[in-house]
Amino acid sequence: MKLGNSLLTLAAGLSSVLAGSVGEVHYPTLFRRNGTEDLQSFKGAVLLKNGEQTSCEVALMYSTFGFVSAACLDYTDTSAKTLNSSTTYEVAISSGLTSSYGRFKASKVTPNPGYDPVSYANNIALVEFESNGSEFVNYIASWRQDWIEFYYTRRSLSNAASSTWNSPATTMYNAQPDLNACAQANSLFMYNQKDLICNELSTPSIMNASCSIPYASIYGVNDPNAAVAALYSHSAVHNDGSLCGNEKIYNYFIVMQNYVHWAMSIMGKKAPVFHTRIPEYTEVLDPSYSMIIPKSSVEGVAVYAGDLYHLGATISQASDEKDGGLSPGAIAGIILGLLALLALLGYFIRKKLKERYESNRVRRWWFFGRFEKEEKPEDAGPPMADPNDPQRPSTYPVQF
Ligand SMILES: *[C@@H]1O[C@H](CO)[C@@H](O)[C@H](O)[C@H]1NC(C)=O
Ligand SMILES: *[C@@H]1O[C@H](CO)[C@@H](O)[C@H](O)[C@H]1NC(C)=O
Ligand SMILES: *[C@@H]1O[C@H](CO)[C@@H](O)[C@H](O)[C@H]1NC(C)=O
Ligand SMILES: *[C@@H]1O[C@H](CO)[C@@H](O)[C@H](O)[C@H]1NC(C)=O
Image (cartoon, rainbow, N blue to C red):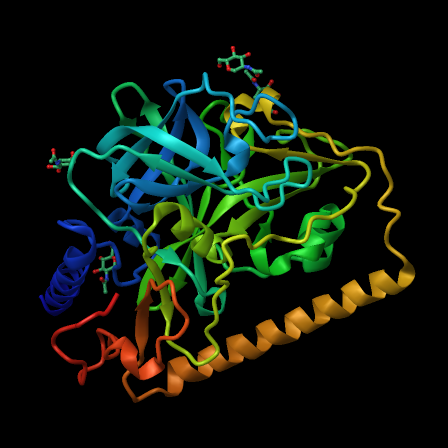
């Protein structure tokens, strides 16, 4: 079959290219987009603490590194500066949706130095884990403007000890959130919209089917590819409600792209990221990148984060402090900012649709994973073509 062949070609191209940099690579993970069933082509992972599964998914990069929410780790103090060294972490990895790849001990977890356990700013950590000797690569989607659709997953195990996976909850969801409502419920979102994705989606918890909880990961779909883009960070519940109650809940996901260079600084190697090659593409090179940390939280809104299956440890009730730091001028500024963001979004969507439907030229897709910004556009190798394009080249030399 033609598509099958092109997938194989793509896979072969990827593994040969990656083999040079990270040794034997058997599991390239970029696949043609075809609805959420595409997710069966990806490895997924869940963080285990002291042998028990958490609600936290790990966004895999390599067979030994992944991102996880920093709020999912255990600390000895509320300032989250010191990890509780008695907690043991493992990463359970699924191959496709339900088959098990293995369960691996974490050798090191590193919360982002800017992680703020009050606002949940920079709620991200790097987990390093053992491998069984086989290497694989999973891509992080690193250019938000690319994403024309979103896949959501919540993976879980029916038995952590034997690494038996449930069929994950998956959905495709593309509706625009009410940005104003998302910002009113959470100061962090108000100031850091480019780093967060907000929505009201939920799926029944494996712990209690009458309680719905947020999804765990978001994949950015960038026709014809998809890659993991964001991880669940925290939820804001109106009227100091609970996650399982009837109050209005907004969920926030941290977009990983601006933390890639921080991860590289710890991994000591390039990160496998994926984005289209368009002139507007920029990346945050600063490993100490931080969100803007709000001074106060929103009154009457409870904030939850971390392992939602064992909430006691990670709940952070918003303080009763009024969000008094905002003058009417600042509020007007924020509203203007929101409008500008909407306009920008509109611009990109229009541009993307235009590109999508009028292009009879080869569409260009690009891989990226460099430390340096100096690389000139023409140095980065030939484009990957749309598999549907009859003029596409038959091989995909991809430079990493
Ligand atoms: C998309 O997935 C469906 C269901 O798995 C399958 O029947 C169909 O052939 C796929 N289409 C392509 C273009 O891969
Ligand atoms: C650290 O973790 C252990 C085991 O999970 C727990 O018993 C202990 O209370 C924790 N210490 C602190 C300071 O939270
Ligand atoms: C590692 O685990 C995977 C999945 O179980 C398996 O396919 C692979 O052969 C294993 N590699 C080694 C070196 O054991
Ligand atoms: C399950 O969730 C529902 C809805 O919040 C709650 O009323 C019920 O007490 C929960 N059951 C258990 C066993 O926690």
